[in-house]
Length: 416
Image 1 (cartoon, rainbow, N blue to C red):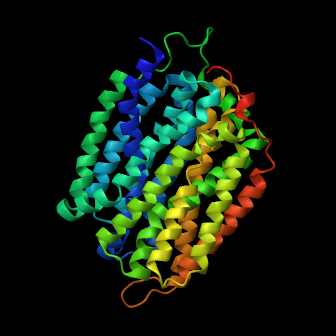
Image 2 (image 1 turned 60 degrees about the vertical axis):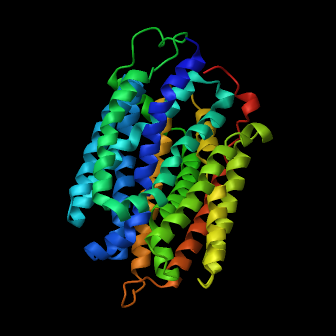
Image 3 (image 1 turned 90 degrees about the vertical axis):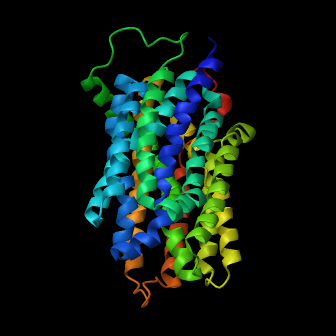
């Protein structure tokens, strides 16, 4: 069987697993106002719910990276999908804020290695100069989970309730375990595992230390954490309350607008990846995209909330600039030898999901400082200041990241 046929056989299972992980990261934005009313949550408590999921993903990055390098993506991803299923089921049954938070933490553990495992597989199955393009296509497939978490999830919530909908999702996660085990191959048949004794646990952990001693990792991790953190904090948490509090949008209206934002992000995730080969630069693609993200957040910050059409236009434009993960990972991948790829990807993901967690918690505490009105709505000034802070963070991250030397695809065209 050719490599292409192997890849096509693996694509459905991996794609569905990535769709599931993106779906779970994105659903809080749709049901956040309902959770706020049902459980009488403050803004800080509300932000802690999705933040728990991202914190769970962040703390599991390094252990998952060790497991990926030691046991391979096939068994690692399949095992963690069982954890995902238990977390989603627990969340659907929880009736207290503490219970919801704990089960979202468990869900975060479960989805931690899905994207990393896919990147490890891509690094073994495709040429390195095409890694950003293939990663972009993968992110694009997974991005449909973000779309499903918008209007379709809102419609299912209206029809069946969010608890029953998520209980069905947990069953789907269990079914994916079997699909992954049957279809995924850790290495191409013509590219066997490296000869010699396999790295032991001590050697793997030492390799992780080598990765973290690389100064350039922190600049790339910073731009990854701020770009993904700012967009997902907006998309997965505050866009729903913002539309509800400032414009009075109902559940289905929020779902439709979030769907448009998610579709814009999906387009950017697919379109931005190949640009590193068009311009023969990864650093420039990331820096320009992050700069435009800062500009759109700045425009939301100066808007007074009087025009929903203007706000939606800016939010869609923000989505069109935010699919920067693929060139970020490709840039990082070019800095390390093959044997460290699992630990490298998890290290970058640690920065990314740690950034999402910190930005969500910090913005929740900041917005909490603004008193809500009698209906529990947060004033527009709280959101405007939050958007302004995110714009500043993005500008600073670009300046820090620009110090890292570029690794153009034309100089990184070796075999996987």
